[in-house]
Length: 509
Image 1 (cartoon, rainbow, N blue to C red):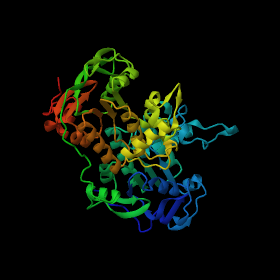
Image 2 (cartoon, one colour):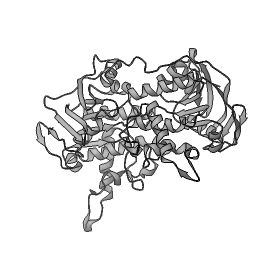
Image 3 (cartoon, rainbow, N blue to C red):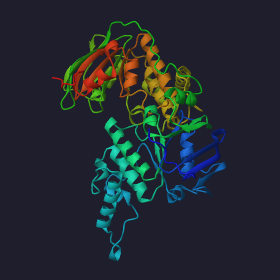
Image 4 (tube, rainbow, N blue to C red):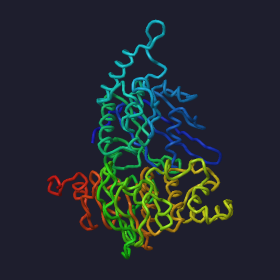
């Protein structure tokens, strides 16, 4: 582990900060210190106060009590521009760039060097952008349009933009949630480079292994309060989890014994040209089957075709022995299939609608008559599932967008479980949710399987796959390259199949 390069005086600090929104106390006497050359993690469950703390440091919110200090001097930020001028930049999970402008134009938007008669000096803009990109040690074309960039490259553009403002503090809010393993490794290389150049980094992630791989210090919040702030050296993941949730979390992966029954879902030679080829598998009642593999292997595309969102070019899908018509989600739902999609915000929820309306969307025919929805039935259904899934909310009539990520995921699950499916397909069920909610989702999936539900799970979280699955199907470049029973599924065997190699390291035929 790299040692912190801390100076005696922090670059940015928060002292005894409190912030309330009505009756909700989001922060209660929280202190934090960020030092030059140090990566500092901020840990806590959803609702712990992390987002509020970030917004206080970024000038979005002003604390009700306490103070913000830059280089040891108290400051008052009247808005984000004041924080930016003080050298504080925030990199969010989803970058907000102008897609039809180039990398260079996005970085220097509104600040382009000028030539005579007010004309933009495009060469100076490109040269300055190239210098920033070289400083990050990455390969980006200053003249490329941002529309064609991956999320990872868009984040690098945001980081370069922050450096163009002489940012000394970089706040990274869940930057790896949508990145592949290779993209995460490249981002971490950039962060280490910035640390060596003296930048202070505040890093927020639900992935504990990332905190231990990148950071030298970690501050933990719970229910708006400061629990601890320590060096990472000497801590274990169990220590950190205990501080985040306030209890031992021995059962992060609670796997209940289940009686394996008849085949509920049978997929035969499913093919979509250029995406996946000749995919065949079964899922039985009481069984959790995981689709594993690297990002881009075709896992999500397969389950979308099984559910009928995308039409397959060849192959069949049978549910309880009955063949489903291709490309018909309505037929899949009628047959008892439910799909919890990978992107809950874009594909799983209508963010402007209420919690109760989102839960009721899959059962409108049972909640009313003649096209009119009976509000009492809708609210009763939502309230029932809110209790069963331990949903944390203020009012069921609130927009679902005000919920934390973990609670939004529970709403998506409630929406589909309310259809009483026989086959539940879940794509990345715990991505971007906190450790406590992750354990609740695992417990729910395990109990549903124990009750006889057939579960097909797509996951990029290898520990999740190994702990929860009865069988693991591994995909590589659109094909299933291995089917591993629980007893034979290891990190080595799964990764060997995911990279198209045998356990001995040879390229698979």
